[in-house]
Structures are given as structure tokens and as C-alpha cells.
Length: 110
Length: 114
Image (tube, rainbow over all chains, first blue to last red):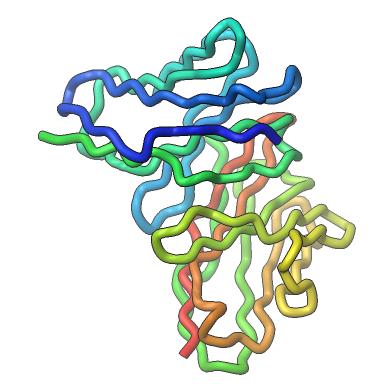
């Protein structure tokens, strides 16, 4: 599976949009981009996934560049409860192994 | 959304004993489940892939005789840590596949071996 690169940390103000970047320049044509987050001492929570098109659900939006080499997870109105480690993972469907990197630690400040 | 549960959430055991952790998909059937462990301040590491009705596939470096995995039904996979030692103390997390694309994770089990 292709590797991903994320900044180690970022912060944003409560109520503002949080834009979390991810680079996956070696992504293959059949590989999806997944985003999960992990709040301290809990299991990872699925957020969203996409293949080529931008995706939106009740939690977030996923913007994938046209060449698919990078993506951005957008939390439109961050709250304090969104403070977590966010993992960007690339894999070829649910049966493929999800290789967790270090993720990006998002801190939402009041 | 899809719900995956784990039991117990926390367990403390003596060195040399065995511990069983259950992973259940509550509102869907999962032919494939995954087991991870996470040490403090580290990321999740995949231990094995559990397929219903067949043997689990272990990642390199994971001892299959120490970490016994059984996936006897479409909603239940179990991980048994045999002859546990303090170095096995970790956060064990399972996930279950839903459909063709996404995996959903359980809340995790904190194992402490004294």
C-alpha cells in the first residue's frame, strides 16, 4: 500500500474550519484514501473515504486533488471534541491492510 | 453507523495466565476482522487478519501460538493472549469490515499483565 505523509500537528480555533492535509504521491489507481481519528484511549473512528471524487458526510469533507497525490480533510466547524489524532491512510478496499502512520494531532483551542 | 464492541474494556492479569478478548460486530456481519495493538505513544500495529471459518493470517513478527485468533461466526472474533507477560501489556483493538470498503473499529481493550 502507498504511504502517506502528514504534518505532526496543527491547531485551530473552535468554530473555525480545520483543514488537515495529506500527501500520498505513490497512490495506485485502485487505492482509496481513508481518514480515521483516534481520541485518547479509544479505538479509531471512521470519518470518511474517497477514491477520486470529493466526498462529504455529516462529519467532514474530503477533497482529493485531480492527480490524487494529495488530499485534505475538512472539519467545517471544529469543536473541542474534535481534538484527536487524525490518520490519513491509503488502501485498496476494506480487505487491504490499514497501515497507520503517526497521524496528525489536531488541537482545537477555545 | 456500524458498531463494533469489545469485551472486556480493561483486564489485569498475572504473568503466565491467558486472557481472551472478544470482538463483536453488533449490527452487521463481518467475514473479515482485524486485530491491532497499540503501545503507549505509538500508532496502531496490525497483528493479524481474521477470516470467518478459516485460519487467521498473522503479520510478520507476531507469534500465532501466543496470540490465538478464532473467528467462528460472522459477528464474533476472539483473541486469546496465551501465557501473558508484562511486555504483552498493551491496548488491543479490533476492526470489522463492512461492505467492500470501510473498516470499523472497536473501543479497544486495555491489557495489563502484572
